[in-house]
Image (cartoon, rainbow over all chains, first blue to last red; front, top):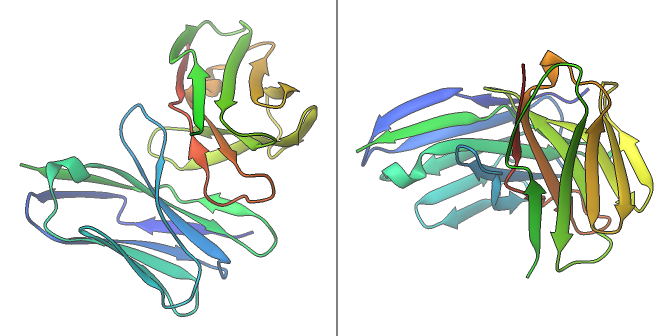
Length: 110
Length: 113
């Protein structure tokens, strides 16, 4: 059974600070997705990474996929209140299984 | 462009009552469809997925059932709700054969009292 863990579970920071959240698995991912979910809404896809060591940037967000494809990180530079939300990672495995992490709930205070 | 709808947005039901949640997708054909439940502070738990009309796969044994009467319609049902059925229910779709890159609906908040 593949396990997918996200850390930290909660994160509260001031506007302008930088932060990093993590997603780790006990198994190798074939691909990994990051989503952001706002309260009362469905998750929205931010990025998909598929290659070990891959780095993708989306404005102030930087996504990194580990060389061994078992972990990923999301770094936000100069966080803004609009970044507040639940950040979910979802990993796909070679057996066509897909798992979501429990998420990191981020609060950015103005 | 593709859109996905869910209704109702919020539902309060007594224990033992039936349930029917509906999900429809527009702008695509033959999508894979998924039902998830999200409990407070927890990740998404896949309940059912469907690769075509009348084809339903269940991920976990439970009090719920799903049906796909039309290509772009996915229904989540229960004959008798339990307190533990409370949660946030999300429908999602993907391109046929591609399980990654899921597009989610707005969700239905279900409270069973």
